[in-house]
Amino acid sequence: MLPRGNLLADEAVGEHGRTTAVRLPAAQRRTQLLETAVHVFAEHGYHATSMNDVAETAGVTKPVLYQHFSSKRQLFVELLTDVGDALRDTIAKATSDAPGPRQQVEYGLRAYFRFVDERTDSFRVLFGSGARRDPEFASFARSVEESIAESIAALIVVDGQPAEHRDVLAHGIVGMAESASRYWLSHDRSPDVDLLASQLARLAWSGMRGLDR
Image 1 (cartoon, rainbow, N blue to C red):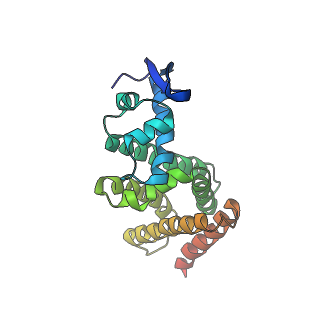
Image 2: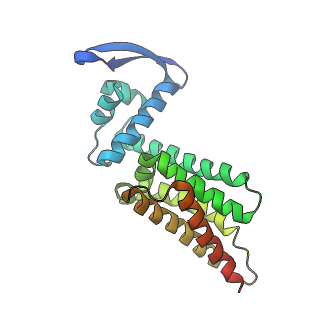
Image 3: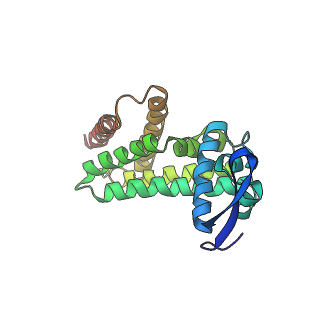
C-alpha cells in the first residue's frame, strides 16, 4: 500500500472501455473508493459483492483498488470502522451542544435519525444482517451500540438504581432506536426525522424519569 498523501497515476475506466490516467492524492482516491464501496455493499451485501463490482462502480481498474485494499475483507473492515466512527462522532457532537440531560437525549436521537436518513447505506452496512453474521464484522456494530449506550446510561441517574441496571436500560433505548430506524426506512420515512426523534426522545425520557417513582 502506498503512503497516504502520495500522488497516484491511477487508471480510470472511461467511455468505450478505454482507460485514462487520472492523478489523485492517495487519500482522496481511498476516500472515493470507500464512498463507492458503502453503496455497493449496501445494495448487494458483503458476500454477493466482488472487488470487481466495487472497482467498476468507482470507475477504476481492479489493480487500482488493490493498491489501497489488499482484500475485500480489509476493505469492508475499514468501511465499518469509518462508518462507526462517523456515527459516534455525529452523536457526540450533537449531545455536547445540549443545555441539559433531557436535551442530550433528544439531540442525540435526532443526530442518530438524521444519520440514518442522510447516510442510509452506511446504516444498512453497519447494522445489516450480512455484517451481523460474521463475528468480526458484528463486533463493530456492537462497539458502536455500546458507546452510544454508555452515554445514555450516564443520564439515567436514579437513587438506588444499580449501574448494571442502567446499562441494560440504556442498551434497550439504543435497540429501540435501531428497530425504529428499520421500520421507518421500510415505511416511506414517515414521520419526518425531527418528529420521529422528538417522539422517541419523549418516550425514552419519560421512561427514564419514571424510574424515580
